Length: 278
Image 1 (spheres, helix red, strand yellow):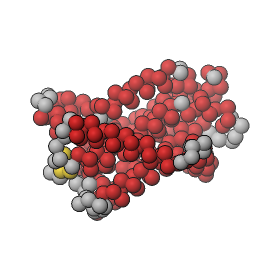
Image 2 (spheres, helix red, strand yellow; image 1 turned 90 degrees about the vertical axis):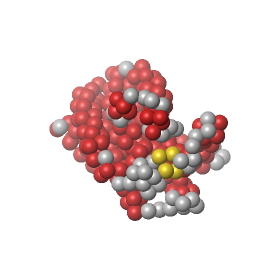
Image 3 (cartoon, helix red, strand yellow; image 1 turned 90 degrees about the horizontal axis):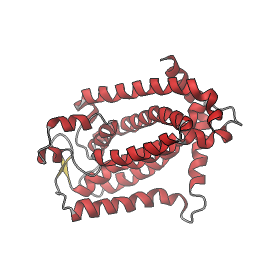
């Protein structure tokens, strides 16, 4: 626990630099493109169109997809309200994994704790997430799923996503610096989790397909499941997901806490030797 507290204090004391570096990353990432940061929005919109075309039209998804608490939504609305979480989590985890070994020579010249390197990479992806979420929010105002009182829980789920990503990135960035193959394994795992998390399919299909109940319980162990369902319930005004599923909320934060403690411990143990692994 002492390791986790030390790492948290490093994030707080270095927040100004974390914010500056994240903004620099955001500007430099698309500096050579004519459309610049517009690609932050264009790429997800293209992917959403393809997913809607394949899963919504070609595979004939129903126009009444369950959200939560008895609420339903058309597939395209259900899709965009949840998949924005994936567009944040996937690049944040992948880039966070290689953040230390790809930037350590640059950061080593600064008075900057290495535990903050994954933080500014994640924060840069969070800026992009805010843009995409804002666009989806505006789109929803032209449907019957207008802003509701449930929107006040959106900052909570955003914070939950940030906490989850930081705790996971502490582990993956440390292990990837020591063993490069970890990054490649992580890419494969994320591809698998995309299809095992209800981004493109609704959980109700498990029951409709006659799957055993324990299958859904196993899938619930994936923290991304909690985040995507929370976002949908929030943006579509379906429920107070965190409170209505209080035991799942407790599990999620338990997972984050354990991951943070473990990640902080191994990060502090090996970070003095990171340069040796380059």
